[in-house]
Image 1 (cartoon, rainbow, N blue to C red):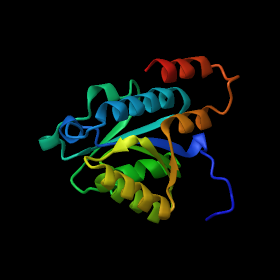
Image 2: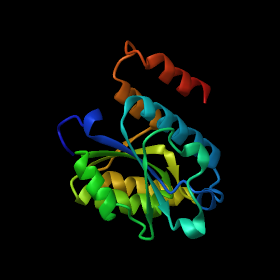
Image 3: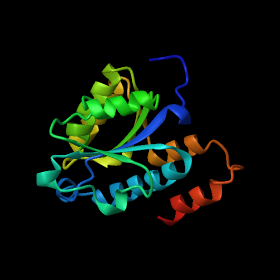
Image 4: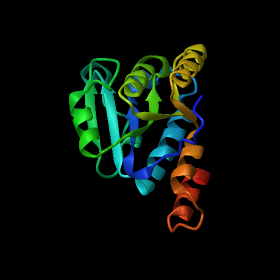
Length: 186
């Protein structure tokens, strides 16, 4: 285990919402809670961060990202057939141009697309934060084991709210009341 504190650096960070498509989400038992957590993370990140990316697994068959989880402003969608989005050249080019070195990842399914992407991003020297309460799989065991594996490979495990407050840094910032309202009311 590393002996240094790994804190989120806002300037070099992006939020990646993975495969939040209705056909993928529907069979997941705790989907409403996960969707609520992703929504809070997204809305707060829109206030605190700059770079938001969305991946969609085979959108021709599985549809688009659920509308509630689409950012209001600038974001980029990356369609994929591979389970890992980390090998998408367009995404990698954009991450490089924007000097992104850290990723906050949430979405579906933990043990398939998220795990493969996280492992590939780690291999490519990204610092990866996984919002464990903003991701899920159809089976709890698949989610739990995937989280343990990603953590053992170097992913930083956190919750959506912890990530939000780490990005916010202080209750004295102008945006804090808006962020606090999003967390309390959604």
